[in-house]
Structures are given as C-alpha cells and as structure tokens.
Length: 259
Image (cartoon, rainbow, N blue to C red; front, side):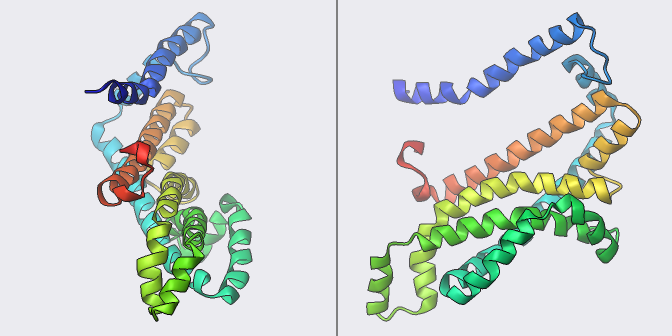
C-alpha cells in the first residue's frame, strides 16, 4: 500500500473518529449537568431504548420507510429524466415547464401533504407522491444542466453526420450528463428519506417517522432519538449505495482523483 493510498484511507476514517470522540463527551456533559432525558438523553440511554424495542418491530418500521423512500425516488427518476430530455430538445417546453417546477419546489410539501392525503386517500399513494415531489426537482435540474453542458461542437458534428435526435441524446448528451445526474441522485436519495418521514408524520401507521412521532407523543425521547439515528444511518447507506453504483458502472464519470 502506497503512502498516498494510506493517507486517503485514513482521511475517510476521520468522520468515524470524530463521532467516537463526540459520544463520550456527550455522555459526560449530560451526566455532569444532569440534563433530563426528555430534553437530551445520553448515548447510553439511547442505546438502552434501542435494545428495549423488539428487533422485529424495528424491522417493520425500517422497511416501511425504506420502501416508500426507494419507490418514491425511482418514480421521480423515471419521470425526471425523460422530462429533462424534452426540456433540452424543446425551448418552448423549457420556458413553459421550468417556472412551474420552481413554483412546485418552492411550495412547502408539509403544507400540501394533508391535501394530498384528502385527495389520494390514506394509503401508500400520498406518501409516494410526497416523496416524489421532494426528490423530483434536483433530478430534473441536474439532468437538464448536464445535457445542456454538452460541447456545442459535438452537437454540430452530430448534425453534420445526420445523426438522429435519439442518437444525439443517447450517445452525446446523456454521457456528458452522467456526472450531473449522479450528483442530483445523491441529493435526491437523501431527500427521499425526508419525504418518507414527512409523509409518515401526516398519514401512516408504520415507519420510522411514525415511530418518532409516536415516541415523542408519549415523551419517550431516548426511543425517538434511537429512531432518528436509524434514519440518519439509512440515509447515509442509501447515499453510499448511489456512490457505489456510480463507481461500479460509471467509473469513467468520476474525477480522476477518485480512482
């Protein structure tokens, strides 16, 4: 192992070392100042609350949140990529749809979530819609920006060779957009967890967001913190999964120093 590789591997462990240093400080400060559990529980209290809950119960809530987050993210991805292509190929659509997308993004989803529940019912549909709305905008913007950043000389060359519009998008614009698309996906996959939790606050009987709300309503704050830590871990794992997919299948799109 070279010195550069060793330094890179060590630097990736810095967040872990920082967390391990924060936990004992957190524990000591809570005990020293006798902070009540309902204000700020100590890490030991959070751990005790975590193991006090049956693992099957954690699994049920974890799967409920994960399912909605992934399905909402995938639905958003399926809609956003074709829409981005249409916006790149049509200036009329770009000028018409982009302001509408900005308006949708600037509208607080938590404000329209109850309306979606009334319109779509109390099933999984409104939760998927809320997650999709939250993750949609960064995916569209990143894909559109990536395809628009294609060098103009390549577009002119494809036209001189009489390449079809489909080939222009598939062989020229999309490869240039891949780094931008994955940047948007990394943002969107973490927002998907937020969308799922917001949806569970409004209408759900399962999920980690519902579990947090249930725990806080009974002042089981350590239990709520345990669920929050699970949500953070889940978000981080999904982010790393997107990174891994890019590394395995689109390694050429990564900066050279990432190899």
